[in-house]
Image 1 (cartoon, rainbow, N blue to C red):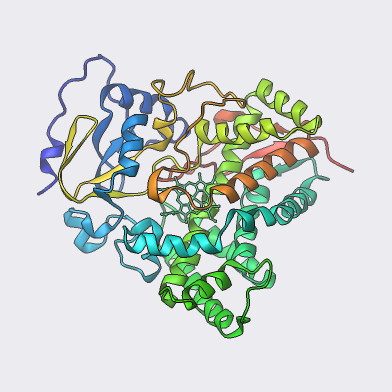
Image 2: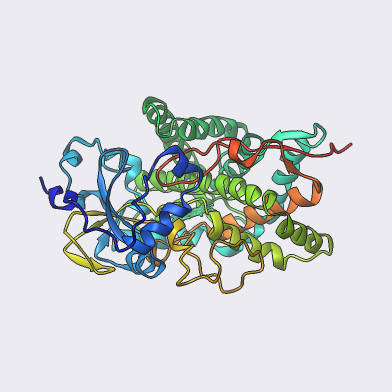
Amino acid sequence: DQSAPHDAPAPAPATPAPAPDLFTWEFAANPYPAYAWLRENAPVRWTRLPSGVGAWLVTRYGDARQALADQRLSKNPAHHDEPAHAKGKTGIPGERKAELMTHLLNIDPPDHTRLRRLVSKAFTPRRVAEFAPRVQELTDDLIGRFAGRGSADLIHEFAFPLPIYAICDLLGVPREDQDDFRDWAGMMIRHQGGPRGGVARSVKMMRGYLSELIHRKREALPAEPTPGEDLISGLIRASDHGEHLTENEAAAMAFILLFAGFETTVNLIGNGALALLTHPEQRARLQRSLAAGERDLLATGVEELLRFDGPVELATWRFATGPLTLGGQDIAAGDPVLVVLAAADRDPERFADPDTLDLSRSDNQHLGYGHGIHYCLGAPLARLEGQSALGTLLTRLPDLRLAVEPAELRWRGGLIMRGLRTLPVEFTPLQ
Ligand code: HEM
């Protein structure tokens, strides 16, 4: 058993505090004390995950940043050296070799470089900026649907639909099909950590739909790009101009954009709204600044919300391609490494008063979007959506408040993502 040496008892920690339990419900509600313990006592620690797979958890900012950029840590699950790997039962995405899994987050250079270049061409900052009025329209429309009622569940009625419609628009999924996507995405989120059948079914439906859509768009593609051309058409065009992109890679690309850009943004809006509602002074400050027509505090504020309680708790899987040392810890070839972004972003070695929410924090090079060659491709879109959603919410519903005690809120408890199941709020209804 390759992993046996890691399970030997760890040397006694220097401090008497016992090692915290990870992955319990209590931990899901507030993982930060456990992360503080890990940073101080075992910054690179071999840990059994709920699925039974072992992985190194990296919790200090310096080590995390280094690991994210280290090319010896591969994204390709084929490098995973775990007996369960052969059976495909580890729960690691991509180990089942599904066709949609050959995407950016599961591959290394040179394939990664080629595919990332193609998608960057179709997903330019200008394209995202052009998208701002549409995101604002979606935001206003969703708020309008519950504003007259005086209460809402901000996850289901706001945070969840906004990103899915935004990404569908960006990809070029016709409006009449977008509710199907909403349903498939809902199945993927709801079944996380639960029965696998629902996820597999919804992935299959998406796969079939995307292949057909790519095919249709390829047939109908005009010779010259039109202004505001959708992303799938842009990808097809890029691949038809000399650079190789198979239809399967195009489908996998569309899928990763949906997958990476959906639940993350749901949680940015959900976790961000909760942090604002539970920090009245910071929230009042932001409302004053928005009322004065300023956007600066909103911009630094959304970055701070990402650092303080970001959507991605752990960066996606990495596997050592050879022996290496990280934070003084020897790591063997084939070992999985999980970089705990949520822990790194509260590291007092890097951030002053890391447990304090400061919307005007300026020295804020957080790792919420990752670092290195896999740095979040969708960061400009996520910023746009986060600012639009949270800014508009506080402006239109100025007395927004939680309808339950914070301790009553339930977290999803997934491994990679950190997000709420529901966020019930109340406010004075708009006429
Ligand atoms: C990669 C976070 C929104 C597309 C990543 C990574 C992180 C991240 C941490 C790197 C993972 C790793 O290295 O293991 C976030 C957060 C978001 C967000 C916090 C929202 C607040 C989006 C959106 C899109 C998107 C809206 C696109 C529509 C991607 C893609 C990658 C990625 C394609 C893979 C890039 C690569 O491997 O080269 N994201 N993301 N993300 N993200 Fe995002």
